[in-house]
Amino acid sequence: MKQYINWLIKGLAMGAADIVPGVSGGTLAFILGIYDRFLTALTRFNLTALNLLRRGRWGTFWQHVDGTFLLCLFSGILISIATLASAITYLLEHRPVPLWALFNGLILGALPLLLQPIRFTPKRWLLLGFGVLVAAAVSFLTPVQSSPQTWMFLIAGFIAICAMILPGISGSFLLLLMGMYAPVVAAVSDFNLVRLALFATGCIVGLLVFSRILSALLQRFHDAMLALLCGVVIGALLRIWPWQHQSAGATEWLTPGEYADIYGSSDMLLALGCVGLGIALIMLLMRVEKLLGAKPGDEVKVASSANPE
Image (cartoon, one colour):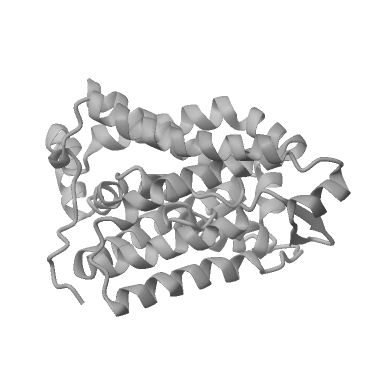
């Protein structure tokens, strides 16, 4: 039961991150230590799983796909989205600085834990730097406006879900860049079943395909991939810099003083407090994990010694 609560709490954190454009649920899964297990569970939806279902071996199927883990995780995600969406949307509109600062604190608090197990070599340092550049470059892209054809919802779903499970890259932000964010929201509001079905199909295909690619890369090049992913997470800090200004569809990154000139206040003390709160929350989550009895062997780890590059 304690482990189930632990997974549920981590799902709640992932759901809260998915609501915020610029933050990825995959980032939270990565910094909370369940990323490997999450990918591994997704890759188990394969022919073996289908054969188990066809033969009516429900219990074996559930164990094969790590069903209890996924159920707890996705339950937490859905509960978080249902309960926090309104509050986070309000903060994004009226008090964005403390919200962005909180997520900065979560990432900064987790970075030492993420970097510690990596055995760095010059090549891995280069991969870390490359990940930073890629994530930062995405932040400078300008959203496009489009009137999409129906088939584009399939592509949008595929790309959005791939971004969701990739640390440091926001699925909602990529939809915005593609000009698909508003059409997808409109499809939900209008309950357009055809477009929603195509989007959902793209999500399912992307989830099953991309998770296998990431899992295979982690198994074959574990420390190198961790270095790259850590770089992407670090680069994502630019996207969630607290003092931002939207102008003509583009994002401007400001100093606190410049932000105060436009909006009347920089909320500097509150932002610093939220950064500290984010760091404290990461420490608390690690503490809760120990109190709930999680052991190193409880999480499925990808063997770092498997064919290092």
